[in-house]
Amino acid sequence: MKLILKVLLSAVAVFILAHVLPGVNVDGYTTAIIVSIVLALLNLFVKPILVIFTLPITVLTLGLFLLIINALIIVLAGNLIDGFTVSSIWTALLFSILLSILESILYSLLKEDKY
Image 1 (cartoon, rainbow, N blue to C red):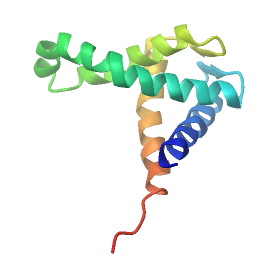
Image 2 (image 1 turned 30 degrees about the vertical axis):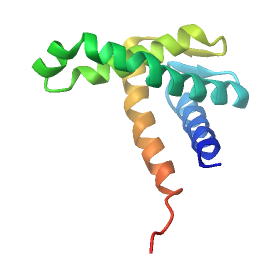
Image 3 (image 1 turned 90 degrees about the vertical axis):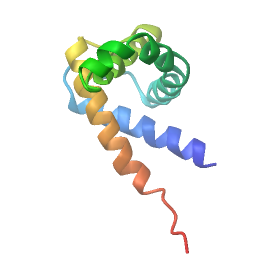
């Protein structure tokens, strides 16, 4: 149940950012849900491979290259999904940063009190 809520909150974050950022377009709510699922799958399967291949440059830049990897994942999702477009890598970078901030804020609403 919590996984479904996280996917829906990610879709809300994608939808909000698509309306705020000028270079990102999402056709509708269902496309935002598909984007959140595809981003989760790409982060699960593709991102670890990219991180391993780019480990030397990631260490050299003290981890800042991971932001570029996140932007590449978003551009890849934009190429895979028909109703989701990202205009440039810089827009994807900004989208990536704002998406992680907004998701962390929304996910904090799901935290349960542990007594």
